[in-house]
Length: 172
Image (tube, rainbow, N blue to C red; front, side):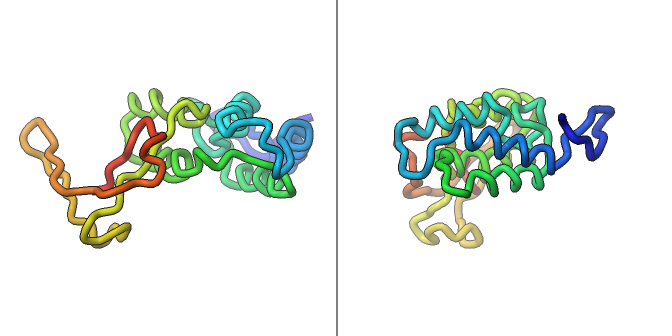
């Protein structure tokens, strides 16, 4: 059964202990062992999403499981014991997805976050500049409001994964 540890907006939240047991069972039954490349990164990400293990701490309204960071850590602790998890989407989810969650409007969150969590969209960060490399504190690229429009001035020189990316988030 599902252990209950808290109530969120009237809904029961699965305890970390019960979640860990469920995650352990799912991981051992579904994830390939490290070194087993029989499934693509996209297939693995979709499997995680379909089972409710992608975006564990993201709100359910945006495709996540609506649980806590403790739940998320419990899942990855179980998967770390010799199993293969997708890494291709780690920047998309853990850096840019979270940034979108924190700063994006509801329309963008509902459009992109579920797609990111399913592995249907890959995002990159446009960070490195000719004069400062990847040092955000030294970034010269500026985004400024000009009436009803935004004007982006500056230069980005490269981004890891740019050829495979669907979207880029420009850090300015």
